[in-house]
Image (cartoon, helix red, strand yellow):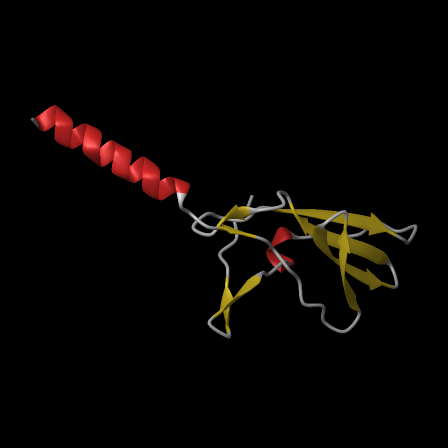
Length: 107
């Protein structure tokens, strides 16, 4: 009887995991930025006098309960070295019409 309960719980958890919703990242550009979609994937492009930065999701979809992963590309337009810090990147999420900060991983 105990084994049947365990099997039942495992089946219930597996069924609920299959119902988990997937989300798609979208971007809202600020002044000096462009929100683009290429090949069905959203990206945010920011151009400054000395650099071009693009951020996009690593995957087209991610689980609503999971942590999204983003890819950041930086192109230095100047001949001088460019200083970049992960700590200077911030991401927010719109939840029920309110902006919520997302926690970031620091390397």
